[in-house]
Length: 415
Image (cartoon, rainbow, N blue to C red):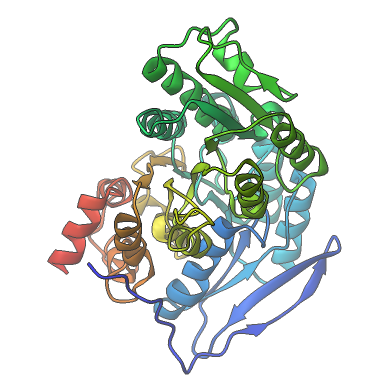
């Protein structure tokens, strides 16, 4: 498939409705036509490529196919921020929330119960312990997204790829693994165990402890010709970026394995390449975003792609969470689950991966096209009871978990 350009209906005008929620900017894409439901979307960072990817899918695609309007939060960094947004949304007549944050889930679900607003995690998962605490809430609809195994495998497979790519000096960026980000921790463990298996390493410390290191750590790998440096922290924080800069001062590297998005540090990486006068291969567990598309399709000063390997989510993976919320808002929670005592579901998706430009571009095309989208409006209508009266929870599960490339190609071909 040739790369498809993103097609936006030219006659639509996006109007920003802005008001304050704890000093943060909140925006809504408003369209002409009848609006039946308004939906709040919790965004952890509006500047994040992943968040922009999901926002664009909802605003520029879903909003054109359904009678809905989305409000998007400003950057959310705490449960209190999220609750403030939820309460502000109640005042705007919002019926439900799709969240891409969801920390301290019990506290947040309690707020949704008070406000009588439905809530679903749009692309993430929660621990079994947290799930048990909130599963009986009438308004908590559950979660859709990669489970711990998928995050681990994404890190492991990335390490497996780079271990076969003539690399021996690795820097592993672990993001929030040291501060409770379970996804980043599982990805980091996967990277370290993947390197250990492929490179024949024997660590002197427990892998989970290494992955959760709070300080930059040079790993004792058991082999003199393989070096691994663990660099923790979010690259949007002073501590995180300082950790990276100091690590780059202390040594040279031929591979960066990142458990989150690398667009924020791409200039730092390319500067390091020029300083050490050699290429640095870059891998990321992130998403099929516009920013990653541009990096894969552009070259560094050594005429190599700026990103060599991407594993990640794609925009329309947020579609099933929307379908779940729509079912509940339209009075058909039974279309999501057969459980008579709970409205909650836990559905799982994994990641796509690409290690060359052509593959990335083909997969990216599946996420951007209005007519052949990975999760199209027509696909979602098949599992929304207001549109398909004989739909079942099993059909929702089957569609949601049919996220793989071959699943998407089959749906597109059949449509």
